[in-house]
Length: 79
Image (cartoon, rainbow, N blue to C red):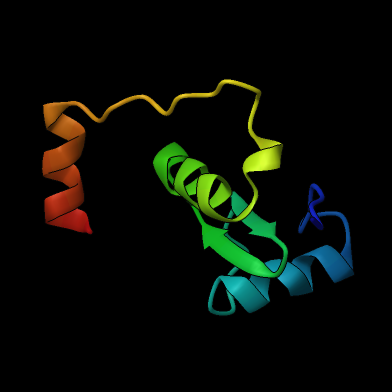
């Protein structure tokens, strides 16, 4: 799995990577895991992706927390 910390403010290559995944913007945070980009992701989005594609990157015995009522509503409203 390819992963790294990007600094769009201090490195032209990092800035280009972030812009490629963030529709031309330098949005922080932008997380890129094996070429899949997440712009300003929720923890849930990252955990779901890792659980499906890279469970080896999650701590042993990791159990994702269940969303509460507010986060379920926000997911319905904002997608």
